Image 1 (cartoon, one colour):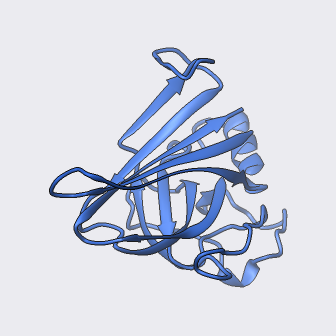
Image 2 (cartoon, rainbow, N blue to C red):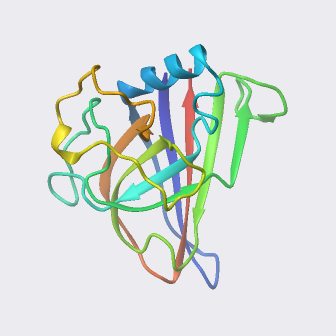
Length: 183
């Protein structure tokens, strides 16, 4: 499985494109736990991948943060999370289609008052709840050690992680992120 992210920062009043990025991402080791859980019992995690989280705490320099680690189980300083505004299957040519394919886009738009700050980390999440205010992350003390003896069945699973040079999102802009997963 691999992923790529398309980011657009636009002026909230005019819609003018302020910044645009296309970045490759890292799929975490815990993504395999999510797949195993869903294959064993599809009802055990009824939301599947259901949110995108952004944060301000990627380690390293703000313009050149450290590469993410595939053992990460949380963002370092989560700022906001939001459910997807759309999910779209894509065919081999990148066209939107109405049938299941191995390429899916997960899109989230943060409005002017949402996720304001110096964003430099993000993740696709399988949250335990559809409510963005309810979180169940593993302790920050567990990073970077990933243990398969910890029960992740009742915790948020961070399936991808991306650290990137800071995007300063002001309260006058909207931020649209499309996370594309290809398996």
